Each structure stands twice: as C-alpha cells, then as structure tokens.
Image 1: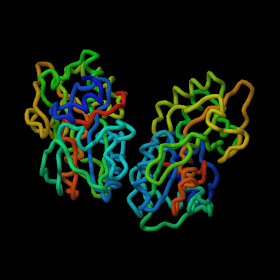
Image 2: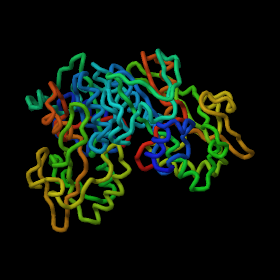
Image 3: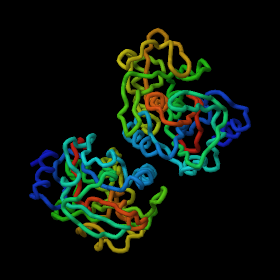
Image 4: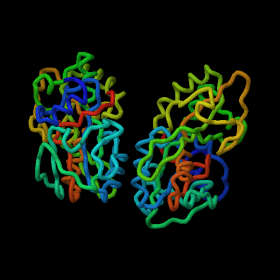
Length: 250
Length: 250
C-alpha cells in the first residue's frame, strides 16, 4: 500500500485511521482547510501573506470536493482519516467523514510530512516515526500577518536532532518551499513562546535525547489556531497529523 | 534618483513617465492588477494556480491604495507612470493616474525587471535597456490554468542571448521565484505560438543579433490578456513596462 490512491482508498474503507506520516513515500501530503465562500477570499489572502505556514497547493471551486489539480478522482469528504469541525472557533466534532455544502471552498496546504522521506534518506532522525506517534506541534507566541478577518498565532512542528543534523536538515528542507521549507528556529523553545516541549498543543510529545535540540518548522495546523482566534462561522480541517495524501511528487 | 521612494516621488510629480526598467536597481518591481471585490477571490485563485506568470507579492485590503507590506506610504493611484483601464476586456483608457472605489482590490505581482540587475552584473545582455526601449512581450498560444471566471493565454517577455548566455541567465533567474523564475522556453518562438518576433503584442521589438536566440520568461502582463478573454466588468492595470517600484529588496 504505497501509492497515494491506495492510501486514500484504505482510508475511505475505514482501514486506516491514524496519522499519515511515512505513508505513500515520495508524494506530497496536504493540510485541509474548508470555509464558506464568504470567508474564502480573506483566507486565501491570509495564506498568500503567510507562505511559510500556509503554502497553497490547490484551491477548489466552491462546492467541489474533487481536487482536480493535486489528486483527480479523490473526494475530500472521505479521503482523510480524521477531520475537525470548528464553529465560531470552537472544536465541536472530530468525525472520520464530513458533509459538504454548495458554498464551501476547500484549500489544500503543503505539509512537512512531505519532506520526511528526504530526511530519513539522509540518515536524519524523524523521532515521531521512530516512536510510532503523531508529530508534536506547538502554538507559538509569533503572530501571523493578518488578512481581513483572519489573524492568530503561528503553529510549528518539532523534530529533535543534534545541531549538525539540524544543519543538514535545513539544507535538505530549504528546497521544499511548498512544504514549509527550512526550519524557522533551532534550539530555544522560549524564543517562540513555547513553555513546555513535553506538552504540545497538537499531536504527541517525543523524546529529546542527550545532545539533541528541538528543530521547529512552520506548520499547516496554523489555520486551526487562527480559527480559535478569528472565530469564523464554520471551518472544517483535517485532524492534526491526519493529512490528505495527494498525487503530487514530493 | 536610485531609491524606490525617490522613483515613486518623481513619477508622482510627473517627471518620469516611461518604462521603469533599470530604475531603483536592487529593488523588486511589480505588476498591478485592480479588480472589484466580487472578482477578487477568483483572480487570486487564478494567481495561485499560475504562479509562474502571477507570483503574488501583496494583496491589499478592499478599498486600500497603500501597499503596507511592500511599500508603506506609497499610493497606487499615482505612483505608477502609466495605467491601463479595461472595461469588459476592452482597453478604454491609458491615464497617468487613476480614481479608486471602495470595492476595489489591488494585487501586486512580481516582475522580471527585478532580476535584470543580476543579469547585467553577470555580464549578460539586456537588450531593451541597451536600446532604451520597452521590453518586448508576446501573447502566446499557451493557456493558463483557469480559475473561476478567469482564463486566457500566457504572456511572455523576451531577451535575446547566445545559448551559453541563456544557460547562465537560467541559473541566475531560477532563484528569483517571485519574479517569474527561470525562462519558460529558449529558442523557438513557434513553440509558444509566437508568429513574429518583430511584432510583440506589448512593448517594443528589439534586435536579435547573429548567434543569439530568443529567451522567454513568464510575464505579469498575462492578466491583461486574461482580461481580454474573460471580460470582467472592470480591470485596472499598469501599462506594460510601466511598473510599480516596491521597497522590497530584489
């Protein structure tokens, strides 16, 4: 089960319901954000103003559930393992499939899982894959650039590495500009306003070993923190770590 | 007169009314597109779907004329040397300043003038600067990816070079991803559906010398060709070659 279509089919049948890291190696994974059309222009401006956390892979036509550019034939209502539904910024449901409306616009945003194959191929550790847990993600004190009704804090993902490994990881990920690119910060969590590495706001904590430092990348869960701050009527997203697997080569 | 603010002030005073190539070296220049808010989401989706011709530098708040991210204090109504006004796709006016409405949204899009300093610094020819004319631009037979109401042909700019120079230019411009990046095509105009190099649809023809081939880059005049094809109620743009000079480093 290594092609994107096979992964999506297994998810659709309910056979796969966990985080998608390491699935369909070689292909781009994506964050999902769905908003009513009335909020869509403001949100797309927000993405354009914040390309590190929100690199746009595709914006669907209003009402459409098929991402014709990145995964023709797929169905965004059923092809992700888990979703989150926010009403006025409150998380109200975490279903394994979602209903659609004619006025909903779906956005697919690049994901750091996309570059993890390249990290592993270079002999670099990806601790959440080693430990079989979800990647740790933290809400920072760094504000995004606001656009229209949307504002809120940057969210980052974290992978522990030695300083030398972090340098190599920065070189490798800098070419993945549609998957958050190079790390935003290496070393000091408090520089990002992160109080406790063992208590991520999203995903699971992972082990930081002797000689390792935390390496932080911008994260596509940022819109979920923005929903809490900006309280749009409705926002549907993927559950953190439970991504949409596209047909795009990494 | 080498800073962006000085160039914009001279334009505003009416002392500068020609193409802006080679002005304010080291700073990014921008294409302008202004549309009613009702068309803004479709157009921004068009840009995201066509990042080579339409790399977005900034989207202003509806009604705003000050690009706070790329040139704080500037005024998009008066700081460009020449504008074009399209109504239902027809060019109806080419004024040196424009009126604004509360529902207008301005988009600033990267421009290939931004990388010309780097080409000159590498000893490569930029023929339209040598000849003191506007850069030649051509409407191609290559369709853009449509989005909502917007569709139409790709427009390209052209600079003549030897094949070796073209290779070096490709290396240099590939890092200017917000200014159209590397050439889309080198050599055969008919591959892009261009019938006559000496009759560009926009700007001026330039000399092609012995041993030189045409080198084509995606161009931010593309939205003007898209206006003709998609016929929005109103679109205001810069006049080709008469760009907005931003404060962004190149």
